[in-house]
Image 1 (cartoon, rainbow, N blue to C red):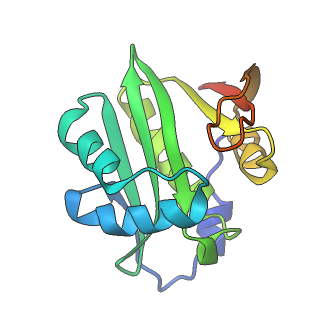
Image 2: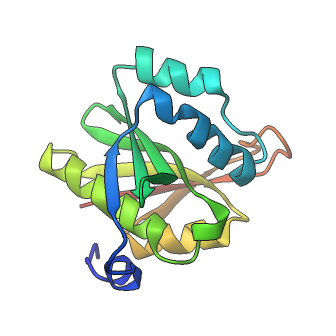
Amino acid sequence: MLKRGQAEQNREPEAEVIVRPMQLEDIPSIVAIEEVSFATPWTTESFTSELKNNVLANYFCLELDHKVIGYIGLWIVMGEGHITNVAIWPGCRGKGWGEYLMKNVIYQMIAKGVLRFTLEVRVSNQAARNLYEKLGFKAAGVRKGYYSDNQEDALIMWASL
């Protein structure tokens, strides 16, 4: 299910790649990615509050050659990882970076004893659904009218590792 390889093979050998905890100074880059990725993007204030006030929150940045190109956020609730956000800068999509980032963070969480993960995804977001299925997530239900911008349904997905 979670196999290392593809993203690492697609990566240019001389590129410096880091997955690290998100810091407050990363928020402008994260919001820029958020704004080009989602119809209802999170704000600077939302990310600031998550980092400063939410003890359940774990946010990570993906850096390529010292530039933030993606991020993931998850809450650890009752020993389960609830993935809140995942996004990659548009020019870096389709190159395995989303998979690389998700695998890296999931492996870190498994090392901390988190073995179940969940997320919601727009039913129309086939690219994301394909990635999540590749990582072992399975559809478990639907939240009707979940997205406020167009009342689109969200597919609930779970992975047990």
